[in-house]
Image (tube, rainbow, N blue to C red; front, side, top):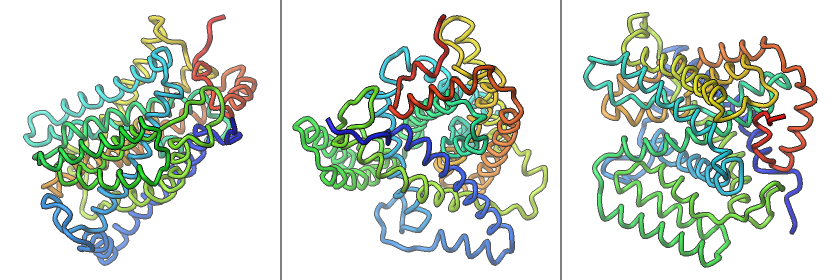
Length: 425
């Protein structure tokens, strides 16, 4: 069968996410500069995002604005890509068996639970803040991979693979949280329409329909039905992805006629270079004028920052150490414990998903949304800087260069995740 050569989904993913992560940092920094240069620039930035530019698509959202089109429209395409990555990894990739899933699933679960607990502890006694418990539970894979890319060859491939798989499992948890915890009143007719559209996509898949145009039309209809139903519209992206056909090609480059692989390859550049940076620019512009330590150390931003910086490293590094100690998994291949700690710190970069959940957690209180942004930015930047420093100055594994040559050969073929962990002698 004809293949796509060396262009595996994994290689494209790591490349585009790394470059896109750097672009995301630039977009977020630009938003902060625009918001804080002068009041006029801030008002222009705010008005550009929040002026009405479209019709009323749902009574809940009201007239569409550029901000809504980005957060509820373009981000649905981002979540479609997230869903494609999840399906590929579980059906045809590094999460296709329980042995391969064990370590990243345990680490991701601990990396969501511990930050949420820390947030709730810090925010205890402050009514209304408990709804933000999930904000520090997310990991921004583009930002984190972007920081790893700045380290060049010093970052072991096993760390990149581990970070990718943890973030994918993390995304699954975030989608479940959005669908369950941050869904408003349900409109049964619209929800029934969404179920019927999903049923149609399932039928098309099972009957061998391959053209992506058919599935993309169904995705557009599903997005609108979910939008009307009261469930957050971005969930439609993940649901639609589950119905896209895939041709399994384990241990080899992607099949050229696999609809899922084709769509994933096409969406990666748009997501990495346009959608995610645009989201970062539209959501990171926090005005800091008049803000002192009292505002920064308020329960909401402090709880989020502590959850991201402390909770992620404690949950992820602690769970890896316990898994290795009790024989549930092997230590990451070619990585030292200090490097594993460094990548655990990078998992505290919540940014895109945390900002997204923050807007959902306090939909009717813009002041709390702004406070949440401060916490997300503080926790993410601190995690990025300390994680980068640890990885930059951590001693390399004695066999670093030899293992990296072997790993690169396996990535070309979208290889087996068994290479991510040390193998018994």
